[in-house]
Length: 374
Image (cartoon, rainbow, N blue to C red; front, top):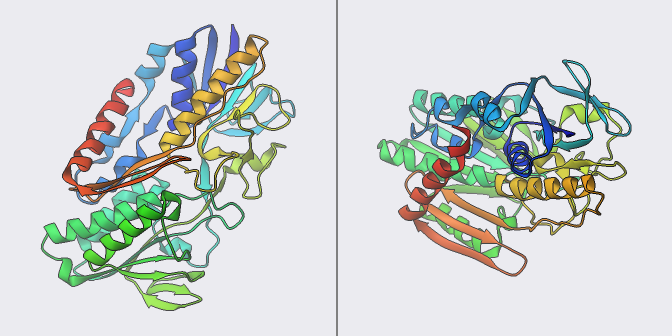
């Protein structure tokens, strides 16, 4: 049997594992610090109490056992020059094929950024938001996001719209929205533009409807305990939620992996890592050719992971890897009780107005997606 190593335990990694196990004929080793999957799309519901940590933190021991996957509880630390040996904190792991899906990290370079909460850093970050909101009697809440200046695709802005609208809905439900000012900020003058022009129009209209102020189109200078500083002026804030741009995982720096301008692993249209045999990348770890609106989201990671597996298995059979992944964006921008559906492909851009139906569809999708791991 061919030995395949998968690095990570997020969306791309677990989708790759399922595809490899379904194909059969390979020995799979998954390397990650914990045998655990955090379903990050659900953290938007933690502040309001719709979800708890235990709902979104899934132990993977039984899942790995069912699929015959060996889990190595370790962190990746390096890679041999030909990619055949992954260095880890628990020792070297040899492979005949490698799929890197360990995610990325957020750029934390702005002065005072430690004073802001970065929601998508995990469940604990969402719990901090929940606790801060619970303790606040009133004040100003600022929410925003930015991109990686060297690689605009390396960003995750969608969840910030969900936290924005979700917090507004929560405060209204609690009967204390009038005690708070909500400000949305971004260095982009049209935030959410990657979702498509229709989505931008819809998102801005929703902000006006909810009386959410905006501070757009000004480069960020930094944060303080009392507010946000930009080249277009400063404004006060008692709580700051900010999603910075993304770059490559820290362990990439200890390798000779080819990197994109933004620090991600450079890949081709087949998800192959440039210059290495039988080494693939999927999800947030990689920089892929495609349109400038190609998203960094779970659905895209799943599509890339399946493509990586099909091409790796083709190489095992002595064939040329020819599969490419479809580029599409599908999301529901949720607000705790209703959501807007946004979809974008090379030919179409769809935005459907907020409806309770889409909120329940998002919750139903969560249940369906997590079934294999429970």
